[in-house]
Image (cartoon, rainbow, N blue to C red; front, side, top):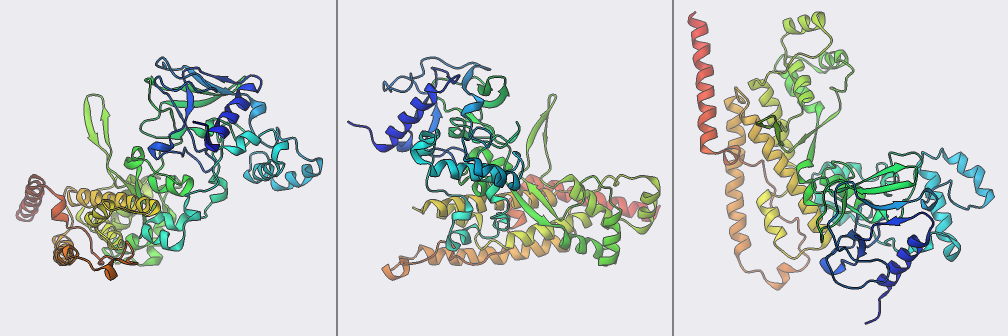
Length: 489
């Protein structure tokens, strides 16, 4: 069977790469055609339709030997010499471009590189990078290419507000750590995974070296590390997501509403809150938005810890807004740093209200999203549902954590969330019953995936085990008992 255009361009690319002076490719690795596995995308928007993979023993491919041994830590996988990297310096550009390129910025800026790439692409067969261009994709799944109907599926995700933000800058996988912006052939063909990565790139006197960061078994895919990005950011920048980044999912909460709610406990208005904000130390603790994330399990010595999903600096700022006038006076005199935050009922109330409000902004529940994912869906719809489902899980985790602050939120706050949840659950039961009824052909046609009932926050008590509820009850009883003793004393 003859080769298709995909295989021909792949072979031509590898031949071009290997013929270039000073390139090195470890014989234990080769480019593999993984289209049959639904692959064909690595990290970045200018990633080829290939993946660099380690294979066992199969086809005798003409451009490279197949892997026959495991790869050890620090083994070199390949080397890309500097003169094969596409950048402003290496392009044989028209002299008339010299001055205009300087006007666009330094080599550290993106625009000069983008112009050079356009120039080299338009040269066609005369460009020394023609085989490289041939393996780059011509369609992309980054959010800037989604239709309005596709973007609606992201619901209340904060990533919608970031579409187009520095998008031109981030649409290319380049070397961001070692000088001028550049395209690095072959390195672009590695996928990235923050949890499973086993290779890293570094710069030495020979060029850019991709080396094994961990042992790589025969048959494993080579995965690079591009940062601990949430999946929403992977989708925005690169047009794909991976389960390896699930633990980095985040949800943005605006400070403004939380500040006003905190101020209401001390009868502080916007002017007083602004003055307090102005007095905050210039150490990054104060910002317009705060990212809450998944609670991370970490190990310190022989002990396991579960890191908070609520940022410490957010607790610091809100605790400042909740402090009494007397304590604020003491703080202004005693030091520059914010006082250690205390997880009081008032702090829990502020956070619970903000998180619950955000959860209400999503039109579907996590259970509904999981049910949708069991259907046959367009690829972009599936990506959007995975993103919004991950964000709802972040919010549920936060609600659970807030509910178990040492003193917990005020009872009225808990009852309000529970009441909302009860009404919502009853509505869901009714909706589920309706969905279980047979659909007519007319009902199925043109029904959008998001045409599901509006919902409130998930019930807090559904997120807690019986043991947790008992523990919180005991904590509350102990608090009430201590207050009684203080009064009688």
